Amino acid sequence: MSVLHGYLFHFHAQNILVNIVSKFRKRIVIGAYLRKTGFAGYFMPLDADDWIHYRFVEFIRTAPVSDAFILNKGCMASLINQQVWVKDLFFIGCGSSAVFYFSNKDFPRTSRMNDVVKTKFKWAIWSHHKVTLFLKNKNFRMVDFPFVTWVLFHGDNNSIIKRKLSSKVSPQIFNVIPENLEDWFYKYFKINNF
Image (cartoon, rainbow, N blue to C red; front, top):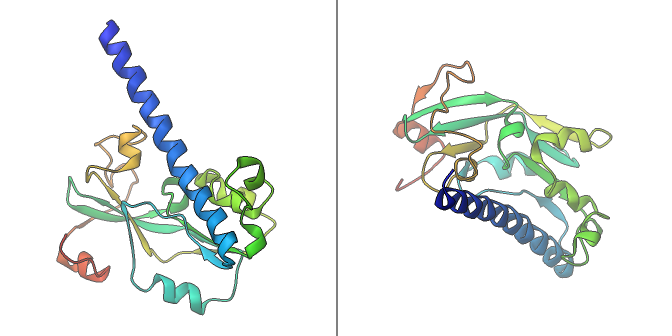
């Protein structure tokens, strides 16, 4: 490996670490702010590259109160292949797959990590693929309706930037039959001007 290649690799790895820390740091600051303002209610970590069905909030509001809703199914949309498919165990791959109910005291007092780990808010920063493990003794509901779409290959997808997924991701890897990503899907999610 050349010196330049090694430097570029180190620079890329540092950028990935900064992006991860920045993402969770913002989430923690939001949690501390919500405690300060007296908020209590549902909180959903949401990535900017995911689409939410316009009826999702209505679904959550009409369901019985729960410690969490975990999305067991969700859609994946490849903008390269112009395909969309439903993925089982959606919460394992997508960070926008859980909604947590927090009382005001469940949010951290400050944005310091030692305050966060003393509260339920730690669920919102822990690894999303283990969410069912740390909720095992809690009242949570698995949701089998695909309310969220994990959008791939649009330029800012975190999984691609961090090289967790390659551009070869396709429905065949998940052993599912895709649909063409066409106007019907955008209308279904009420996505305009995309």
